[in-house]
Image (cartoon, rainbow, N blue to C red; front, top):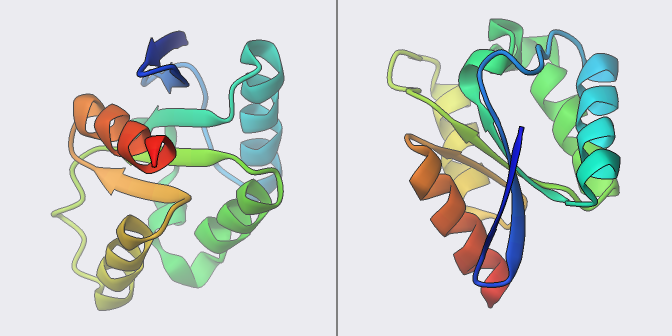
Length: 122
């Protein structure tokens, strides 16, 4: 876990092997632990930390996690390659999330940092 500051915005970066999100309760617990350890609400997480169930919207995992994060005012950027997913519902979910102000799906860590800084700096 690394905490960076860019444009006076604090962001925590979670690398591949630091957490493993498999269910909503463990995801919320892990993310809240990160928030309280770092006193930071802006998180970048590697897609490899997240169970594939998250990307199957029918499981409800993504919706449950995102709803909790909204309640706790946490901004989250998920970094990885999402091109292998063929689900129209997931593609629409990613598209709509990227237009919002709470969650982003991007290819690189640098894109995640820039997007969070742009969104929070306005």
